Every structure is written in C-alpha cells, then in structure tokens.
Length: 288
Image (cartoon, rainbow, N blue to C red; front, side, top):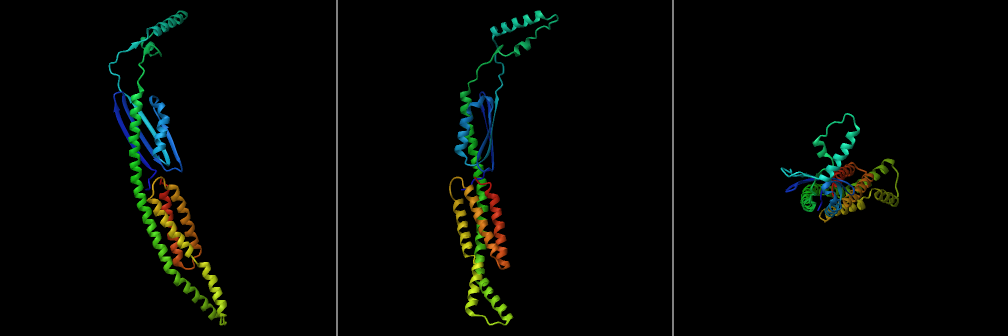
C-alpha cells in the first residue's frame, strides 16, 4: 500500500513536572533523513528517538521537535548554600576593601550567583519515559496521516493506469488499418510512376517498412509495466523507488511509440501517454 511522505502530527501531554509536546513534520526525500530538536532535559534520549523513528519510517525528510515546559514551582522554599554564600561574601569584602568608593552589596544579585541557591536535581527518568511514550503516539498519528494521503495517491495512480491501458488497446486496434494503409500508399505511388513493379520486391519493401513501424513489442512492454505498477501499489513496505523506476520504463516505451508513429492518431496516443506518465511521476515522488 502506498504511503505518502508528506504528513504532520502533534501530540501533547501534561505531567506533574510539566508539559511535553512533540511535533513531527515529514516531506518527500530520496532517503530517510531525521532532524531532531530536544530540550536540555531530554537530550539523553537522542539515540532512542532516532531508533524509534528509523523503525517506523522508511523514507522522507522528517523534522522531529520536542518542547518541555516545566511546571511552576509555586511556593517551594528557597534553600541557600551557606558555605558558598560565606565564601562569596568574603571575596566581596576583599574587593570592597581595595576600592575607595565601593557600592553596597545587593542581596538579590548575590542570590543570582551560581551555587548560592541549592537547586534540587530533577528526576528525569519519569519525564524521559513519558516523552518516549508520547513520541510513539505521535508516530502513530503521523503514519495514519501518511496512509490516508497514500490512499488518495493510489487511487489517482490506478486511474492513470486504466487510462494508459485504454490508450494501448486503442493503438492495437489501429495497427491493422495502419499496415493496410501503408500497403495502399506504396501501391498508389507505384501506379503514379506508371512502372510495373516486381511483386516480390514490393513485398520485401513492404516488410521493411512494416518492421520500422512495428510497435507490438512496445505495446506488450507498456501492458507489462502497467500491470507491475498495479501490483506494486498493492504490495507492502516502501514502494516509491520501485514506482519511480517503472515511470522511467513507461516513459521510454512511450517515446519509442512516438518515434515509430506514421499517423497522427498514434502520435496523439504517444503524447497522451507521456502526459499521463508525467502526472503519475509527480505523485510517485511523494510516495514512501
């Protein structure tokens, strides 16, 4: 089943320690490229996050962003490290004694000095566990979005395949008339020259001309490639690269069909096939 590489997912959860938000954006890309932004409290999860994303996604440029907002501390008591404070005050007094006009110490500035206020080490284990669980749910949402868009792409590709198959059938129906017309044209030109032609030589020339315009092989390959596209669309796993290769093969056969065309009808069919293939190629670029 086709899955689009373009999708967006967002999940948020509230914890006692604060709120965690994941945002995942993915765009089409030749390979899987993961760009990761984590808050400092969850920096240790980088390897685990990448492993989870790599396990769930096959291709695409994926932007993973996590935000953490700590909960308000409220009226939690302020603990002062008195040893550090005493050392800081002693240093300030030494400096003040060397200055003729020292400015009085500001208590608020002292409290801002690193190490004066004891800060409790946060327990990041529950936070990390909750963040990974939320990431899994966000990846689930992203995959649902990719699959939903992939269904639309699959339907469009199937419609184009049906249109191409009809064009191939149309060309097959034209070929007997084209061959008969070629014989008639050669006979008319010989009649205009008023020259008696050797029947054997005429047949040889006719065979050579028919070989030049023979497109049975191209039509067979077009049918084969169309059937393969439909088969791949119903397969599992990443299929974008396979489809991209098939678009190249379809385009090659359409070009050959156009180069062998000797009537306007088959030329128009070749042009229509190339239009359909290009429409498919644009969609295939977005398939995982």
